[in-house]
Length: 638
Image (cartoon, rainbow, N blue to C red; front, side, top):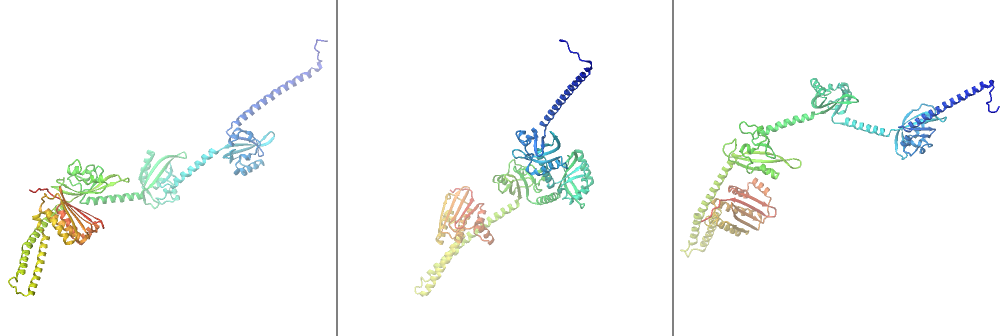
């Protein structure tokens, strides 16, 4: 009937329920499958995310070709995206040097034979730059096919660090092994861990020998010293530098400097030891001390005052001779000046050679007269020398002063000077007496005899001619004798010196000398007309001109001589100049001294007796110039 549901026969109801049950089961299965798919997709997403963000390059490789490459792999090899890698052979990312090795690893793995799961090789980036890789691979199934999961890790930076570390270690090892100092490392108990060859040499050990000793303490010469050093090191944690005595292989001692420091070595506290053999230095120091002692003994034994002073003339060191004052030792003089100590002055003495040496930078000397000086009675004379001491750049840092008491010598020289003057005066007086006798007596007597000879036959007109000729011959001989006697008297003492004065006598002598020798002599005087000088100065100046001209005549081979005599208060200046052949002044003076010639030596003696100065300038073929300065006290005539 229409509008009414058709009733199902009772017999078919169970079949319907089964269908519903089946439908519910299918629906439940579908929901489960969906949930499984969703979970699978979620896990796949997790895996993909993890792979894409992995710090390692990950690839799926089938055969020799890439099927998949993650972002890191693309980055490692320098490509722009996976599409530039997928489908291409894995060999394009392996350096040609390692192609054969990597291919062999893959072949062994595919054949199921033993092969390293992880190995290192070189890769090559897209730009051709080589990189270092750590590669691992495992077998897997991808879409029903066997594949390899390959992991790439870029170890270039680590490799560089390892190589740098290795290089540094090698450098440090070279430094350690080739160091001039003995270097060693021991544990906290002093047991030797490592050492270099320099640690062996001073003691004559071998590596096996020193390793057999085992402990650093075993090379100490004295146990007490060893215990003291290690106790100090443990207390402080270090010893910067200690002078110790070690033991050689043969048991003899040697000196060394030891430094100890507690360090961390391979994570453990250890002692780092540095040993420097100072045996030779100790010998040098001992030799230096001995040399210093000898030097001090020699300098202390000197009769001279020897001082080492700084640039301000303050004493740094002085010998015992310098410390002559009662209760004063050389040490008491340090930091003080000699003029303060001995003369009581705030400033250096007049003519101090150290002051001049500081200005000139050269060795300077001077003789200084002290009316009084501490430690001596009366006046004294000192011969002083000052030697500047310079550093590498030439700056003066100090001086060596040498002072010698020459009072006795100076007084003896003064006595000799006075005696020489008296002798010279006596000689001149004797010459004057002999000259006067020759002129006034011998000359006159000879003149009378000559006149007598010439007038003997005046009263005998018939005298034979031969007799007259003989008498005339005798008269001429007597006239020659008269001339010789007068010349000798003139040489001994110019007769005009007392009557005519110095200038006219010298002028006359130059005229006569020029006439007798043919040598042109140009003599002029200035400022001498109204000057009255003592007879000693007069005769000596006359003799200096005389000796100068005689020397020129004998040795110079000159044609012309210039003589100038000038009064320039407080000196009289005498200049004698010739155009002769000249000579080597130093050589001539030395030769003249050895040959005991007079000449220039005689002139020097006369100038010295007048307290004057003599200077000689001469060159070969350029003539000679003699300059003489003689002090005088001015006296006006009238």
